[in-house]
Amino acid sequence: MLNLFELTKKNTRHIGLMLYIAVIAGIFSALVKSGFEGLIPPRTAATMPPPMVLLEKLGFHVETMTYHWMGYAVNWGGNGVHILFSIVMAMIYCVMAEYLPRVKMLHGIVFGVGVSVLAHGLVVPLLGLSGWLWLAGSEALISEFVGTAFWIWSIEAIRQNMRYNLTHGPDAEFC
Image 1 (tube, rainbow, N blue to C red):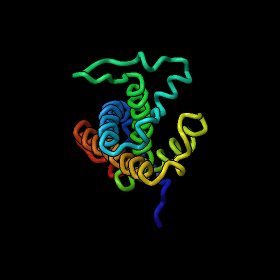
Image 2 (image 1 turned 90 degrees about the horizontal axis):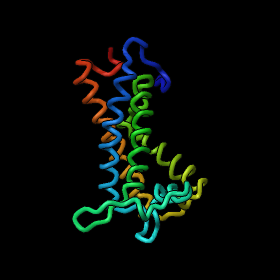
Image 3 (image 1 turned 180 degrees about the vertical axis):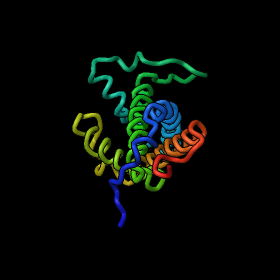
Image 4 (image 1 turned 90 degrees about the vertical axis):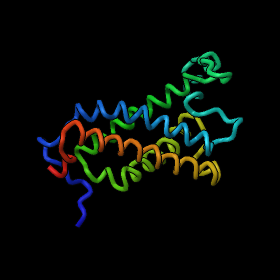
């Protein structure tokens, strides 16, 4: 029988290392998700992204939080929130992977879909940052869930590779 809550042995876990790896994986995966959303946007062009709405609700002037690059105005505020969220989620995921190996099911995609449903299906609408996920339409849902799969898969790929290269050994459950 599959035990979803089977813990690894305490002496096989590398929590500090996972936090370090998660920062790198979080930054990288945020860029993956942003790139994916550039190809398959999750919202209409007229809809402000939730990180920017959050900043406005907190009293920041998002229109001034820009830098210019090759003729583009890039909002560093919204991107910063997006990257910070990705780092925090990568930290949670990487630490959980040290304790609960099953969190890595389908290279973390099950975890990622759970985060997406919780964040965009509950927290974001309840905070008034965006509408309800299930009302967004099929194109938004495809963008959200496929983009999330790439996002978490990139976190898992970096976590697995860096953990192996820095510890010279397998994941905690194999020790």
